Image (cartoon, rainbow, N blue to C red):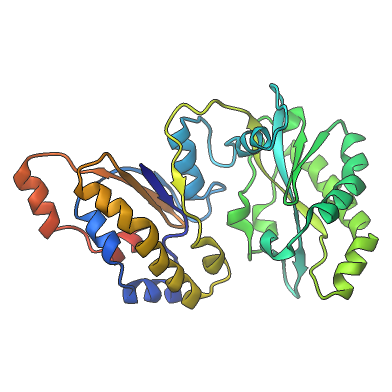
Length: 309
């Protein structure tokens, strides 16, 4: 068993204060029998967040920040024949225009159904195909584009951009210029789309742009596929610290309790905790009986472990 927990830590002072007040007894039990092993990440400005880097490492993928082929893998899972093409994930999104910056809303807030998503997908399809892109629809929030320019185009993960100024995260370089132009054309087309008029009349956010991420050719999954518990994502990205604390307590009781039980039975078990800068993997501690007993009485405090991420 390998449990991967994204958004387990926060950099904001409010988030850190929330962590210090949390009681996570089952995480504490687990840490008493685990030893830190692989650590991944750099800083909060990397195009690839730590949880995606850790997932790619678990799968045995190769690639630098922003060039891990999550799109091709997801497209194949959605039943699309990916062949040896370079794919990117096109996520329909809402860009919020503020006084000084443009921020990206969480795509989950759009609550797109299949009919609406397909209508918007069909509306923008010709724009991409006229530039040599092949498009495929996978799910309401997952559209895919294939093009040779996407082979090694570094793109920021959606999880880096939600709630933030998009300018800091837009792709750069020659291939990105074509995508910027397509983005402008898509925005103009969607601005006057009747479906968006209907959404706004109902008080829903309009779909007014897209975000490209996860570009590259498919790579084989060679390692263990971890179990991902993403319940901390939404409250952290919305900076709802009360909800984040509640989600942490639920995760501790529902996911970490059975993991700690498995560790106490001596079963091979791994845990990867991911913050905004680092992902830390822990594996079942080895060594003598005395060293294992020592860890049970002298192990890191959960809050200290999480704050270091």
